[in-house]
Image 1 (cartoon, rainbow, N blue to C red):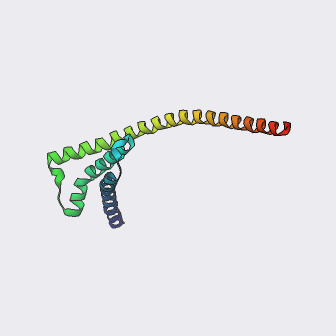
Image 2: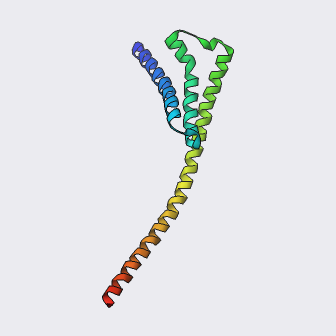
Length: 133
C-alpha cells in the first residue's frame, strides 16, 4: 500500500508542478494578465506553487537534494508564504467583486424594472391611441 501511495504522491507532485508551470507560461503569453488584478493573482499564484515545488521535483525526479542549501531553503519558505498571501489576496478580490456585483445587480434590476414599466406604459398608451382612432 505504501508503494501505491508513493507512486500517487510522485504523480501528484509532477502534475501540480507541471500544470502550474505550463499554465503560467502558455496562458501568461497568450493572455494580457497584467491588465487585471485577477490575471496578476492567477499568474503569481501559479509561479509561487511552481517555485515551492521545485526542490521536491529536483529531489524526486532528478535525485538532487537542494534543500541542504540555506538559500534554496529560504526560497522555498518564501514561496510557501507567498502562496498563503496570494490566497488571502484572492479572498479580498472575491469579496470586492461580490460587493461590487451586488451593488451593480441591484441597480441593474431597478433599471430593468423601470425600463419594463415604461415599455408597458408605452404599449398601453399605444393601444389606447389605436382604440381612439
